[in-house]
Length: 314
Picture: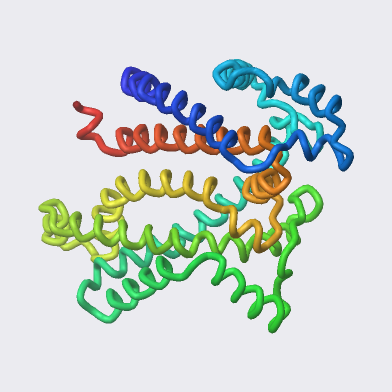
C-alpha cells in the first residue's frame, strides 16, 4: 500500500508543476493592469514604476514564475494587491466555508442518490426505475443558477421559510448557519445526487447478477438483507471513489452558487479577485483548488484499493 501511494504521489508531481505553470500563465493573460488600479486616479508614472518594482512585474516572465513558485513551496502565496493581506490568510479564512458547503451538498447527494439508485436497480423496468431515472435526468439538466433562483423565490420570498442570502458562521449561531447553508447545499447536491444515482444503479445491476447474490437468496435470506449486506456493500466500491472525485468538483465548481446566495467562500473570493484584478489572490485560489482536486484523486485511488480486496492482493 505504501509503495502504491508513493507511486501515485510521484505521478502527481508533474501534474502539480504543469498546473502551477498554467495558473501563472493564465493570470498573465487576463485583461487590465492591477498596478494602474493601485496607482489611483492620478496614475503618477513614478508611483507606477515603484509599484512595478515592488511587485517584481518588470522581471522577465520565467523569473517571475520561479520566484512565485519558490515562495509558494514555502507557504507564501503573495500579498493581495487590493487588501494588502497575505493570500494564504484569505484562503484559510474562506476555505472552511466552502468545505462546509461541499460537505452538506455531498450529504444531500448521498442521502438522495444512493437510495434512489438502489431502488431503481432492484425495481428495474418498473415505475420506480423510470421515476428515479427521470429525477436523475432532471437533476443533470437543470442549471444550478436557475434552481437557486427558483428556490429563493419559492422558499424565501413566497413561503418565508429560509433567508434568501447571507452567511452566519458556526461560531455565531449553529441554527442560523444551517438556515443560510441548506438551500445552496441542496442546489449543489441536486446535480451530484443524479450522478450518484446513476452510478449506484449501474453498480447494483452488475452486482445483483453475481453468483454470491444468487447463493444468498438460495439460502433463504430475506431480500432486504441480501440487498443491503451482500449487494450494496460491494456495489459501493466504485460509488465511493466517484463520490470522492465529485467532492473535488464541488470545491472547484461552487462559484455560481456562492454568488447567488452571497456565501463568502472560495467562489466569491475568486470572482471578487478577478473583478478587482487582484491576480495574487486568483493565483492562490486556483492553485489551492487544483492541489485539492489532485489530492482527492489520490484519495480516490487509495480508497479503491482499500475497498477492493482483489486489488490489494495484486
